[in-house]
Image 1 (cartoon, rainbow, N blue to C red):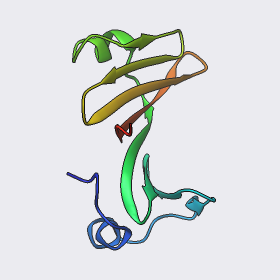
Image 2: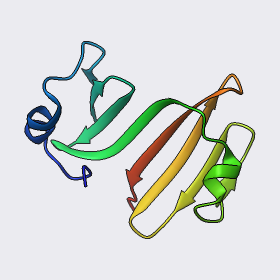
Image 3: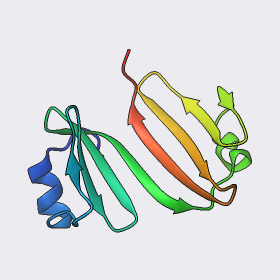
Image 4: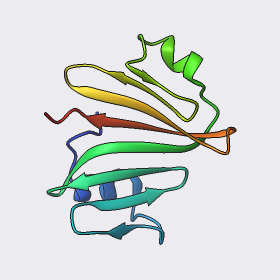
Length: 101
């Protein structure tokens, strides 16, 4: 489970992040190839996979969608959120994130 890992643990597992990585006022974004980790307070809170071909129909096979539009699909549980973001109708990005209430 990579959610909750520290930046140091990511470096130990994957090596240093690539040069697309950056930090803003709230988050640290660490890129590794076709995925990136979002850290808040020095621990992973979300993982994004880019350039996926997953559709809302495939996402709905996991659980009923709580939200569905042409460009997004969302499945939630008590602990996690799995969301699809579409780009140009062909390329999707998938995010697994901790639920924060």
